Length: 267
Image (cartoon, rainbow, N blue to C red; front, side):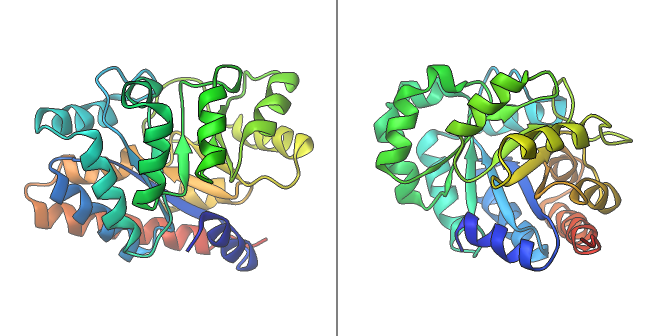
């Protein structure tokens, strides 16, 4: 299913999507594939594959630790494309989240070509702003990839409007200022930010991330967002598990809880 198809299906059901994040190659390539497939099977709608990077400015300690483990085990960009291909076959749309330096090193056009060939729907670029994205804009057009830029509560109305004009597929609204990580309570600034986004562009789907840890919070965020993005809470299930089987079981439990929370939303 395409990402736009997933949004349409969820909208028809009156609920948000759940987007689950997992670093590629964590703790190994095969383990990460198994984790992401388990997430799909538990009810998570979209998989966000993160390309591990040595200087992740936006990532909190949980994602940083998982990415460090993946890098220590030798994961490479081409492994990430293989992971995307395998997870896409499980039936859920797959998006890539990556910092910009690895894309530049690989070659922007070649990266977009191989990302598309692997079956990804598009890319989230947390440290790339539209003003500096000419190569990516061109490459994403050439290979028909969605492009997701970030907006935050500190974005001015002018910056917000400009960013939305360059997004395709959906926009990533960071629910608070700071790095990623599950929190006791979700941000109170997020609903206002989503309202501002919809005032600027009523049609683009809005994903809200940073802080969601369980189904109750997923329902809270899903009451006003089109997609609820969950990363650290899922990754922690693998980090803290005594073995692979226990980690997969724990992932499935949380995935099911998040999916249940999303489906409890009434609009």
